[in-house]
Image (cartoon, rainbow, N blue to C red; front, side):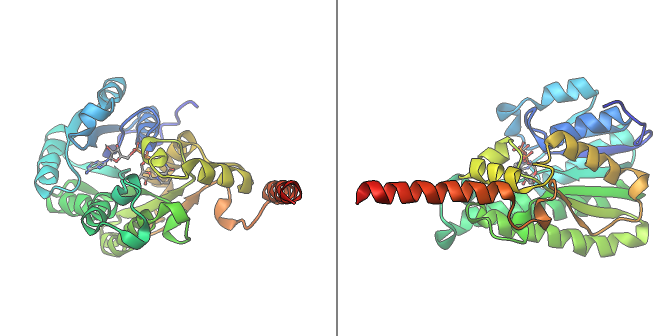
Length: 282
Ligand SMILES: NC(=O)c1ccc[n+]([C@@H]2O[C@H](COP(=O)([O-])OP(=O)(O)OC[C@H]3O[C@@H](n4cnc5c(N)ncnc54)[C@H](O)[C@@H]3O)[C@@H](O)[C@H]2O)c1
């Protein structure tokens, strides 16, 4: 897609680009295409695990390594942002990790230290990032803040476990800050995205089933990371200046569906297989 200059003259910071598959990676590429200048940030450990430096080179962006659960790191981060850009117009929070989920610890038996880490990394980090932006006066009036959520915040997807709680908190922080930021015309929204094949996504047991199920239920199919990035651009642009405190489904229609013909057919096939098995057993 060619750019439309939707973010011409805007500056920002994008958190969470790890690899080429990361949603934040695609958002950074789309912001670059639309004329924005931005810094990239990720946890120091991501330097070893990913290749964000390549993205920085491609988009001509400075990199600021910061653990989004650390107040000291975030305070330092905004000092560097100020040196680079003065003040900024947008923040993208694309950070998440479910520690119990990764370690296969079931919801009924959560390790509470890991649970706190999950909430800290995946939700409270949004609060910290906004708090430090305000404290350092980094964000311009009329700015836009965006994070990434998942429908597991509202409905139970059994394998999503503690991450459903983390996303519910993230969405609540979005509303709580939205009220307070409104007096400066700053908007804050979350995109609730389809299952997407990324490092965070594939860390969830049963992810392939969640992905295929959503693909078969959604009238438009699953939304890709590229299309998510295009949607993100609109939310960072002035075209959506009156949209705030919203959880915006970007999911090919999944959130409005119950069952689809494809799932009905798949269930019929599975009933037929069960009947065959029973006959063979008899
Ligand atoms: N992949 C999906 O299916 C899907 C669906 C809906 C929403 N999301 C959300 O999209 C966002 C981005 O995830 P993704 O799928 O692109 O996966 P990803 O693994 O590429 O991105 C997650 C990022 O979080 C960063 N991170 C982890 N701990 C951090 C910390 N302490 N400080 C700073 N950064 C830290 C990681 O380094 C990584 O860059 C997450 O909020 C995720 O929950 C993902």
